[in-house]
View 1 (cartoon, rainbow, N blue to C red):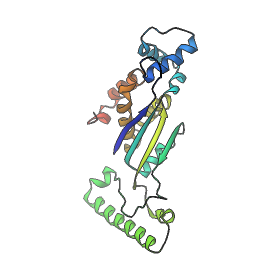
View 2: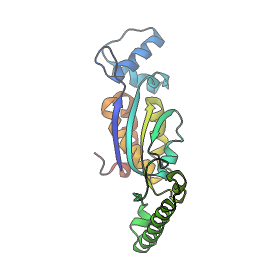
View 3: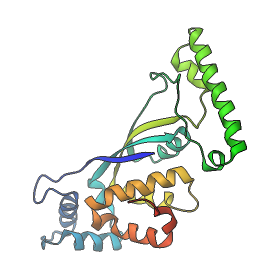
View 4: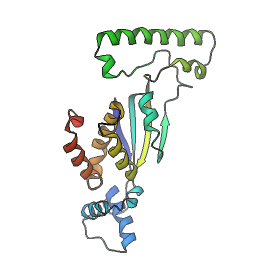
Length: 212
């Protein structure tokens, strides 16, 4: 799995950070002047539940090596923009797979999967040899086929995603995606995401083990 922050909102004034823009939005709401401490201002507004102001900044991630099962969950977060690798146009004659640990770490389960994956590959090839177009041959591909996606979210939606996906109730793969997204975006807006990172690390340290 690869999760990389590739773009983030930059304010065209002041120090150019997304937090400076969010403070500006908040100051307009209260008709107040800045005090050279946007972080304290933002933390206070978030504690108050005034999160509409953080919708003005967004982050874009490139996420690869995840399964179609995972991406189907990801795109259900609708306050977002997505561009995903297309099985209609990209040849899947040699697909990459994402295996759940329950299969990958069990020799018998892995053997069953390998036989199935070989059959999928052979079936896809056979259909393509018959002249079946990629957009139709892809129907044999399972949810375990790997995919790549570009995803853009505003900061408020990201906080929502982190809360619901970094949870014991979330599926393991999207949980790992969310953990990596949080760790990627936090250094760029610690006043917005610092409370969540601290809270979630304290509640679920096992989810952050091995993540820098």
